[in-house]
Image 1 (cartoon, rainbow, N blue to C red):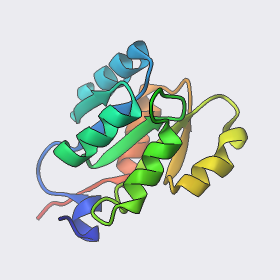
Image 2 (spheres, helix red, strand yellow; image 1 turned 135 degrees about the horizontal axis):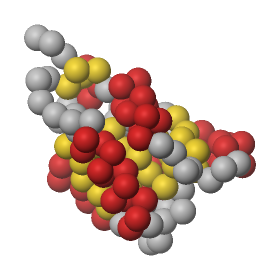
Image 3 (cartoon, rainbow, N blue to C red; image 1 turned 30 degrees about the vertical axis):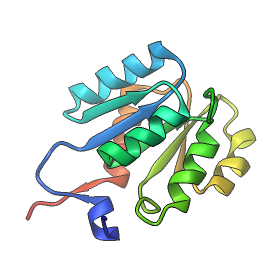
Image 4 (cartoon, rainbow, N blue to C red; image 1 turned 90 degrees about the horizontal axis):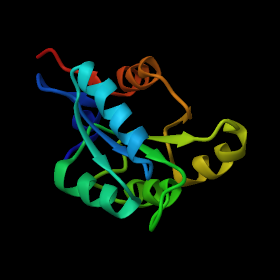
Length: 137
């Protein structure tokens, strides 16, 4: 089990990012962008797959689309945040153009931040840099 310092601080290794999105093209694009930035990236096509990967792979940050099948991003975030082992894991919600429409529900789910779709490579990298610090010791 990770404590709060371990959740947000990464020892000298690649930062592990999980991208959960029902759209294969957006998953592949985000995976390519973050892979180029040096991150270790896993992808999930729906919320249940993402939840499984959170438990198995213990990523350093999760990007979750609000609109996924079987388990949407809001539900995924709520489940992650309700688990004591993962409650400090940063979860970033990928929302449609109207960021205000999803902000209340995202806040209730416990998400750490919102990122509007379509997002670019710099936006993803900036969010990772903001929420995941790399330990130099």
